[in-house]
Length: 84
Image 1: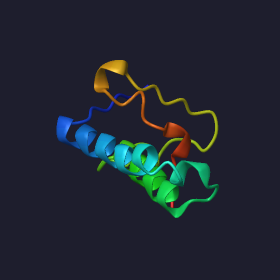
Image 2: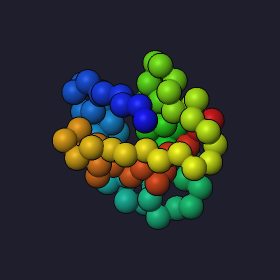
Image 3: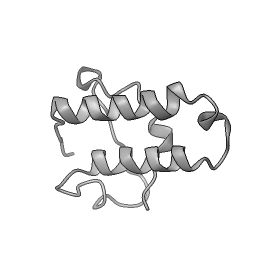
Image 4: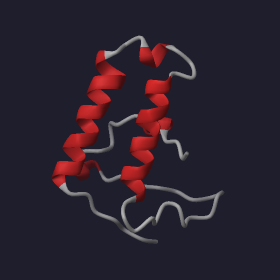
């Protein structure tokens, strides 16, 4: 098991991106295949992956990512997580 931290500025940036695309633009989350949602999913992935690229190194199946409530990230739409 490995642990990775987030700095507060990065958390605020992610929350702002979600608020702009996922919350404010209600049409974007109703449209399947929305490019805005794809971009948001990639932003979430790359933020979670970090400079260490630790998420990219996980096995493709069977990995579990646990997000601490204290980090302020738990409510983000992780179901959108997308790589490339």
